[in-house]
Amino acid sequence: MEIQHFTFYILTILAACLLCVEGIGFNLASNQKKCLREEIHKDVLVTGEYEVQDNGQRVDLTVTDLRSHTLYSKENAIKGRFAFTTDEYDQYEICFISKAMGIAPEREVYLSVKHGVEAKNYEDIAKAEQLKPLEVELRRLEDLSLSIADDFAYMRHREEEMRNTNESTHSRVMYFSIFSMFCLLGLATWQVLYLRRYFKAKKLIE
Image 1 (cartoon, rainbow, N blue to C red):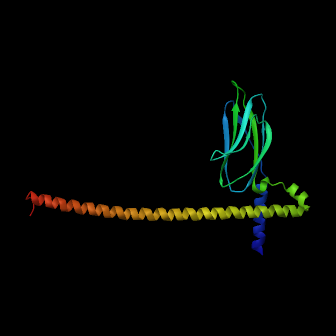
Image 2 (image 1 turned 180 degrees about the vertical axis):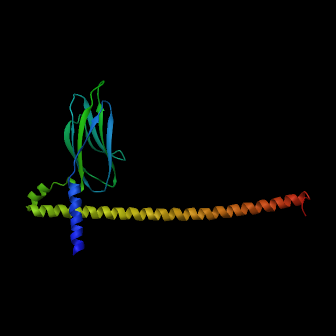
């Protein structure tokens, strides 16, 4: 029973940490490209909100994966939102590209990205399913616990893959070392026999 309480306590702390998401801000100089990249699992909802300080110059926004598939694109992006669902586990890149004519002052860029449980709108879910506040919070914690379980399952799978790779590499190195030793022993034996025949032919030894 104490373990269950402890697990629930840990999940609550994780929920508080993950759900309190703050955006990031940075400066974008003229004719500069800045990108943010993050690894996200398959079938995960990703939402983003951005705002670019307007100084009359153009800024384009693109969201792509490592295969250069464009998931979102916006020319002259000043303020807006985007959303997409990942097709597979991959790295996704959000880029702001400043296209200024001449020299322009730096502008401030604000970006807030959420994915998974963070990206879900539980207010709409509560209205659609007529849930009470406590039920909404329980739904949120349930989704969070499932997300954490999926993350642990993926980490376990990756650990197994890495362990199998390490074992395979170790076996190959061992076999290669044994093969190299036999090759060296064979070469040394051949050299001894060759030199012995050579010295006998020159009558240097009997």
